[in-house]
Length: 385
Image 1 (cartoon, one colour):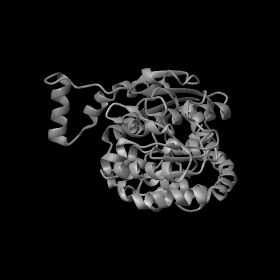
Image 2 (cartoon, helix red, strand yellow; image 1 turned 135 degrees about the vertical axis):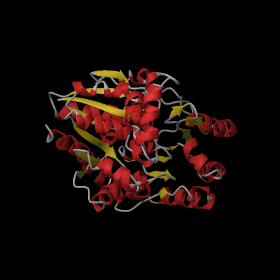
Image 3 (spheres, one colour; image 1 turned 120 degrees about the vertical axis):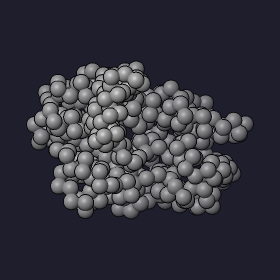
Image 4 (cartoon, helix red, strand yellow; image 1 turned 90 degrees about the vertical axis):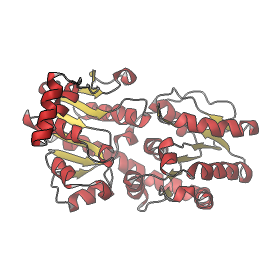
């Protein structure tokens, strides 16, 4: 079975790397004949993933103004509201590889959470037109993200694999019959343990991840997190490891975390992890933390999967659904609107520390089952062959 993953924006988002890396590993572990290829908009960032059989340049192509393609696509849009020719040209780097594949996996997890995706819709249409299997792999979608056009696109998939139960139930309620429940493949990802940095207290270090994505959506959240850091430093003897997980220009955790580090490095209890580690190396540090506070979903998955009590800062349906499937409730997940409330942040942090033992116990009970659900995705995939 030849498989191409697409809708991947490169591995400088270590969550995206985690999805590709872990998905490739579990597919190859269960399907001995599988060959896995990746179409990436930034293929140079994906060379760290050794198990892939190949990485294609999946970057978009511009349609040159006043060229033949420009005139033809403009005419089709103006006369017939038909964007297919234009998007076919823009996504040619992905589309040209469909013919060589058996299955095309649309990955990325939350790509369908950000408005209409006409480019992906066109790629999906081309996959089906060539008689290939089309799979939406490990997705999360909020009900507020749904539209008639999106539902129409989703109905064309041979298989939709939801990584948490909230999305699964929502998609079923929309009448989709092609949906199965699994878990995010990153729960199964290995870790690489590097030497601990100066200032790290073994068994007494808390990880903190914060993102520009969250800060831009709630401007007051940065100050509230600052208040939380002050509270941790005053009320405990723990060290704080500031942990970036996405290092893309314009969406770089390291830049936001650097400001906190400069403010508190004089305490000797605050450190900043490097911005050039791979997903498995970040997971190696997160696994050795006592607690974790994170805005990036796959940083929190790295914590959960190593039984580290975790508090999630203001995110979407994916974080709520993942927590619900682990704990039976949306435990320690703060909505985007809530994280500007420093008192609430501090209260949730205190709740996490007070319930440390019971949370660890719950994680140890739940995570083995969650990992089995990650592998279920491969079982469902194999049934398409």
